Image (cartoon, rainbow, N blue to C red):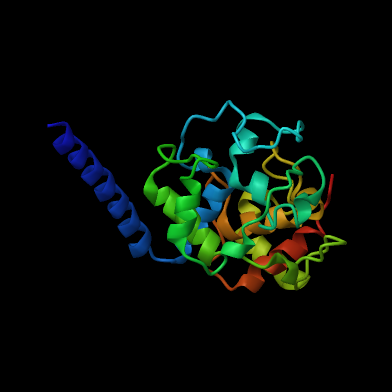
Length: 238
């Protein structure tokens, strides 16, 4: 009886694992899925309306005492807005962790990324649906952007056509952010954000803002996002 019960349990586990693999294998890297994955990478618990984590994520290094709580559960907090982790913008500053980025997964197998998210280090099994983890995996493997092609790492200067960026901004973004980029009032001016952290701004232009109605521009040519980012750096910082 115990043997039969064990066989049934193992069969159920294998069936669930196989179903999860089917979800990954049948997922399509359409722009909507990639944008959702980008927002989940940003702040997954906000996107799926899960309770905000109150503990510090298990793999967060004890050497970093500047961040704790829910901030440590965001993919971007370890792996960076530029997806380069310790080798990118997070080589220093309050998000310095010594953790690698996710650039090595670009072009890889989404199922492998899902497996990493479910391992003992990350521990995301049960915290979000398989479809959500698949969306993150699709973003990581199919939706990353090599930001060094659009942002000078040393000066933080965004490359792009400022004139075109102005036109895009004033037709796509102005209604929510205002002509000077100072809306909504509960966030810093876009001119300040884009000059301080152009990688974060580029990520959000492409994918949207978690929990908000902000549209992502991912379905448009990538140069549109680069042009908007370049224009934002000309807006008032205060």
